[in-house]
Image 1: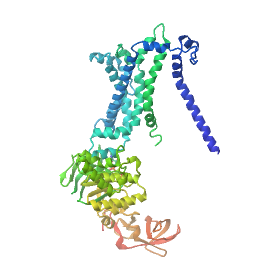
Image 2: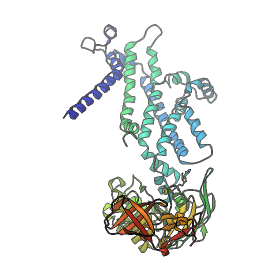
Image 3: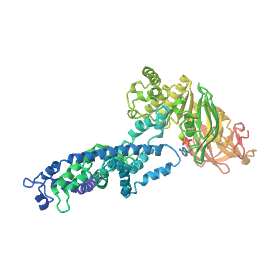
Image 4: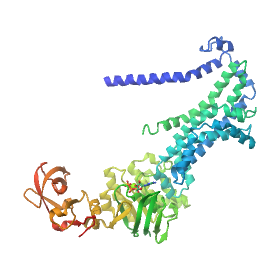
Length: 279
Length: 332
Ligand SMILES: Nc1ncnc2c1ncn2[C@@H]1O[C@H](COP(=O)(O)OP(=O)(O)OP(=O)(O)O)[C@@H](O)[C@H]1O
Ligand SMILES: [Mg+2]
């Protein structure tokens, strides 16, 4: 009896903590979204109030959508993010497989070298990157961003995935070899499906910084045709006047695609994070 | 056809030598069992035969053809793993047929081969299931089926039964023995289990630290071990080693199997005190302590009762003793 009651109390406590955390985490998002639906005056009068009949105003969204290229920015962000993620996952998984599966001279050093990028921010190399992009004529192209983000995402991907791939049964791979599967089939058909949760984890962790990045779009691809959404939203932030309605509306819209991608990966993500914890 | 020849085969991982020169011939149709303590290189040797591990030096030959540099799939071998290693995304049918499909065999022929293997192992009802929908025993039968379908020259088993419970282990063991009779194929089987080794093997290879200690038929190893290691490893419970000098015999140590000792309540050749008793119904194991020789195991047939601490004495048959020198080699 007492044990049952105690566990209810404990469940309640755990949930209280989790709910508190959720509220804190969601609060800025909530404030952004509600204020994006209010008139400018209402935003400043009472930032925390919900939009009522008197204060409800879609002017922010109208401005954003009228700013013709907004869909282009959106598309640019989406292209860059999806392409970079694809390359990060694909090359990361391949490198991880090679590191975990094959014994070759310099395996350890190569692993360390690839993991080093986790600790050294890629922005330190901005000047060199810019010089390279200028030299290769890639400035103001989405390719430049995709290349940089792929490089940025690879270290973590290789690090996490090689750890997971080490745990894939060696017997399974060996059975495949005896049955005449080549190494590519073993990698794509046997190993990749088994590390899918880890892939989702890597995808989510790489996705957010790419989507939110302002630095590289500003430096490498600031042209109108290649602007990403984070950069595009900056047009509403002026030195003297900021169009808060538009900024908030643009940010609210920018949340949607990440949310969708996250929902796609989340089931796998949770399994990836808790793997080992609940085995 | 399936004669395996190993000549001076070695394997090193970096600076550590794991296999230190193995010479071995496994004849066509023979059931050969590798036994040895954990880490002695049984699995490594098996993987080298399969081509999953490079050979550092020496030759691996099947039917007189050197296969050191042949890919695993080209060696006409099949392997059954301890962890089953079934492909999780394929049905039982496709698991069993994959090797033939990879080799470019016609569909009808694959269907016939898998059907035949399924019938041999009574897997017909499970053919359309995924491995995750099977019990451990069924999975291992599928893995064995997958090996049969390929009609290999050589079957390799790496502790195939150690993940199964005791009853299933006996059942599957009998099944493997039956398959060996029916297929007449050459099989190499790695195990930790005394009973599996003794009952299945035509010949047992005892390995220690990457070397072959002795090769022989099960009863040959039991009745005629070459050294203390083999004597202690084959037979369960383990052979007792007594001090030769203390017994007035010209040998460093004298081995006597627990089943060859008799217990007396009166006086005998050795006095001892009962220290523990294990009753198994069909047999009784008595552990007795002798001040010079230490703990001695006696195996008695049927049920017996002794009190712990009881003073008893032991007798042995002089003809059933094994004599070893200082280095552990058998004298006579
Ligand atoms: N890839 C490897 N790299 C380095 N050492 C290895 C490697 N694989 C095996 N070894 C070593 O080789 C030795 C033999 O291993 P192996 O797996 O063949 O033993 P085993 O006889 O099969 O043992 P068990 O009965 O426990 O399965 C062990 O000491 C092991 O540490
Ligand atoms: Mg082993």
